[in-house]
Every structure is written in C-alpha cells, then in structure tokens.
Length: 113
Image (cartoon, rainbow, N blue to C red; front, side, top):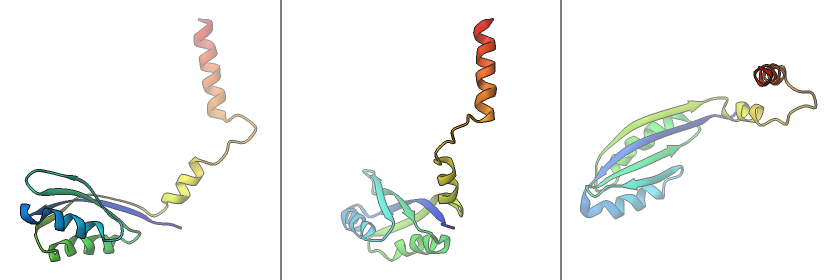
C-alpha cells in the first residue's frame, strides 16, 4: 500500500530576502514553489508519504532566515492512492461492461424516437 500526501502553504518572507528564502525552500525534498507575489508571499506545495513530516517541514520554514510566517492552506492524503489509480487505468476486458450496455440501449432509444 502506498500513501500520498500533499499540502499547500503560504510562506511570507521579507522582500529583501525573498530570493534566498525561495532557494532554500527549493532545496528541500518534496517542496515546490509555484508562485511569488510582489509583496513577498510564496505559494508552496509539500509532498511526502508521511503526514507528520509534512507538518514538521512547514513548521521548519520558520527556521529559514527571512521567513515571517508560514501557513498550511490545503492538505490532501490518500492511503490507497496508487492502488485506486491502478484500478482505474486497468485495461478493459474483451466483453463490454454492463454500464456501457445500458448506455448503448438508452442511446438507441433516444435515436429512434
């Protein structure tokens, strides 16, 4: 079983240190910086299999020189992410599914009306 966990955060940095903060964030595993505003805010995502590590990483942003605040905005996790995804992408068998048959019959009825 594979776990999937992603969070987004808003990191506010001092304008004069924004480039340094951004570079430090980018060196951390699973961290991506997606946008930067003119007033020193960075939109960041953090991915890791462990929810606790993601929370600790966000709290660790406060240790970066120039960071004024860091707030988690969104969090999503799914313990069965890869298993579910593989079920959805499994090749279809030779026989049509029951749902498709019903859809085809409904489509035929509408076309003949």
